[in-house]
Amino acid sequence: MNKFFNIRYIVLVAFVSLASCIDRDLAEVGDLEDITGPTPFYTVTDVTTSEFDCEDVELWANYEFNFQAGSNLAVNGIYYDWTITPAEGVVLINKDVPILEQSIDAELASVVAIEDQIAKLEFKLPCETDAAKIAVMEAEIAALEIELAAAEAALTDETLQNVADLEAQIEALPAATLQDQELIFQFPNPGTYTVSLTVTDNLGKSDVVEKTLTVNQAVPSIAIPEIGEPGFEDGTLFDGSGDGRDSWRAPSSSAWGSVFQINTKTTVGTLPEGTQAAKFPADGTRTGYQEIEVTPGATYVLTYFGGFGSDIDNAYGDYTVGIISTNATTLEESKLAENIIATRSDSNVGRVKDVFKKHAITFEAGENESVIILLRNSGVETRLDAFEISVKL
Image (cartoon, rainbow, N blue to C red; front, top):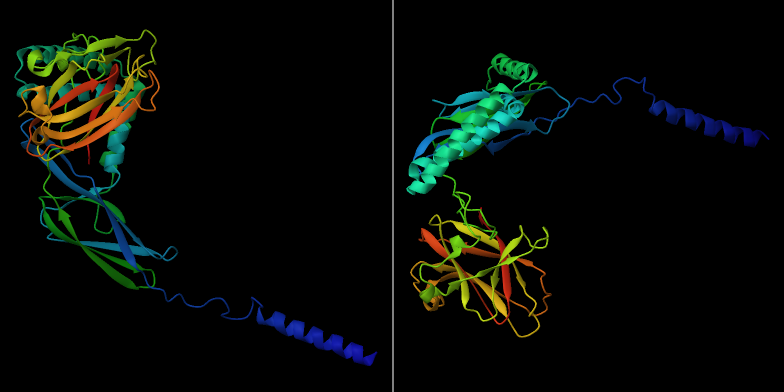
């Protein structure tokens, strides 16, 4: 009995001893000094804006970059200090300014949308040489100005007060400083700048990160080419006219073939776009020809939908969409390798009648300022629809 009691006593003493080792009341246990220093880093986002006229002459450029500081420390107080070299002409902008400006645009969305339409037309107008297009654009601007006046008159007192409050917030924002964690630097000119960030914690420990920032010269955005009657719908030319194929007529039918026919579906949704598509009879005598302007050196992606008619199973057939140099003056010359910039052919093998497939052609403009989009087929009736072009970034 005494032996059993002794064993229990020894176990109890051991448990009490272990418990005392984790007693939270013991001095300095769990309160070790934090000796981790800061490891600074920062991120940069280019928010440069610029404007060029239709001759690609720069009107203005704001070389702005958003800087946001950070470190490995999430608990200790952090202090930031930025240094820019060279600093002459660099302007500091509070990070909240563009956010509040976007909020103002959102309040005035109906007005801003019309102003944007007017600005786009006024941008194109000085460089337009076609008298008919100039007349249409001027009429559109006049009509939009009437809409703009109506939209401005319709703004409610609540909206106007919200805008006034947001403008007051912008005015009341503190000036950005080199001690802000996040701010926008506006650089005076393109060039190379050294940007360093010093991060200091509340224990006085600090470290520095330094990077070189290259501010590139602003360049005009690459214009997206205009394709006339891309969906082959009536009334889609700039002046509201057109039979869906007027933009696709070759300069000489004897050299290029007659323009294609139009396939019409009364039920919306049957075709990829609208109720009309280009129709090419099985004999392959019809073509589509349209010259578009491109920017030398740019890369483009042309997309479209293709399908086959009721004679899909009668014979082998295909359709071809080509990007052709304007050096070609006939259909035969368009087939020469030196005149082909890009081409794609798709056959009826495994295809189903009236089921369209989407295709894409990527091409480089090279030194060309304009190219020809050429449409043709062979073997069986073909339909093409919904052409779109975009700049590949």
